[in-house]
Amino acid sequence: MKASSRSTIESSFRKIANILNVDAHESLAIRMKITLSVLAAWPCRWLMVFNNSLGQDAKAELRDYMPGSEQGAYLITRDFEEAREWKVVRLPDLGLLDVIELLLMRSGAERSDENYEQGIKLVKKLEKIPRLVMQVGLYIKKSKVSFADLVERSDEPLRARPFVLSRLREGRSKLEK
Image (cartoon, rainbow, N blue to C red; front, side):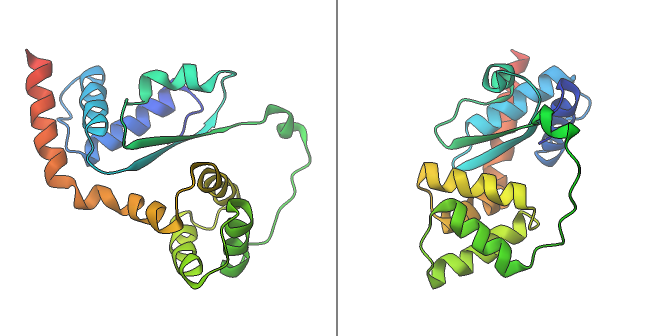
């Protein structure tokens, strides 16, 4: 989600709330509480990316938007202000194999058939955007998660939808009390 301002974060949470079928007539505060409670109770592992955080202490500033969950992980990217003054260099679109090599190099993963197969799926989900591939590669290296686990995490929301809806109903009834 875009994290460049409070309004962009709230806009992203509105979209997540819509996907989770949170009642659009509720106030933003209630919709966010329900969305955060659903994510906190999510039964599968998940990853939330806060992109382009502008704050100096991003974790402290984003804490209210980070549901406490043993299943959840966060990736926070920052906007490097000094880079705004640099001359823009346009790079040609990287080929699929080049992006996979970037992922393998950044993650420190071995070059195996399985990693190439899962790497293709992963870089396609990341739309072959080098910055995202590099960030995810670093996340893989630090967290010791496999490519396959990360690909699976990105597919889980669709499989867990019945659970989400039941949690939404529970969360709404708790908030109404």
